[in-house]
Length: 280
Image (tube, rainbow, N blue to C red; front, side, top):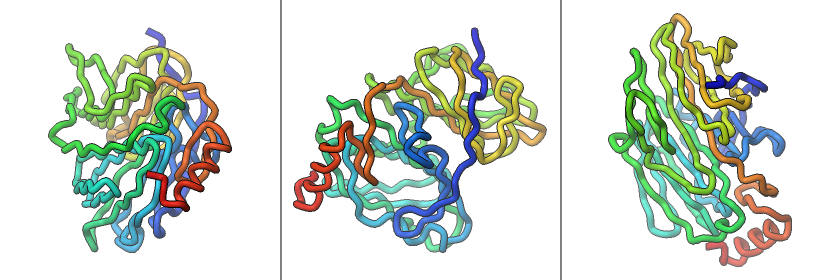
């Protein structure tokens, strides 16, 4: 197997979104900083309620999918389709915006720690105008793969590990997303198969880690080279990262805020549809 190595490091960018939620933008800090088929990833993590209490009131999306993964806290999703979902520690929300969705994501706590990720996964041009859909995935529905002291939680895709093939609950034939939360014990090593046709990125959010013997700084994401394996090593205090991999669409991307399409004309149509109440 050919291990992947770090090609580019990106520090997460402190920013605000929604009604003033403080977060770190891990991917998508600017239009050129994407990883096809992924558009954006945000990491929100705070013990201070003033950083998250305003939440994300009603807002629209078109043309992509969102995957929200809660680690700590309690968030409530509501959308125009009448869906209502409570996200608690370990839960996942998978939403396909398609031709349009209007939703909100609001904290259901006034104190304590709130932590999680939101990932934007692109849709191919042929599927951008499909009907919107939504799915809640409870923590106990996620495969939890024991490692040598650590654990891998599989959110999306297929992974051959520990003598069997594991299937995450999120899947897409077109983009083949592979998303995993990997926690390693102190000094633990892990060799992970990773299909050569997938682009890949990792984000270190706890402890100390190395990729193919090169240190991955805490709070930074790393684009990975071509290869068919991921070689991870934890530091003396252990480490934790989120892995994103997927099959590139190789299509043009035109984004305007919450709308992601393939042409400027499609963006202008999305704006007009939203203003006219015809987005959904």
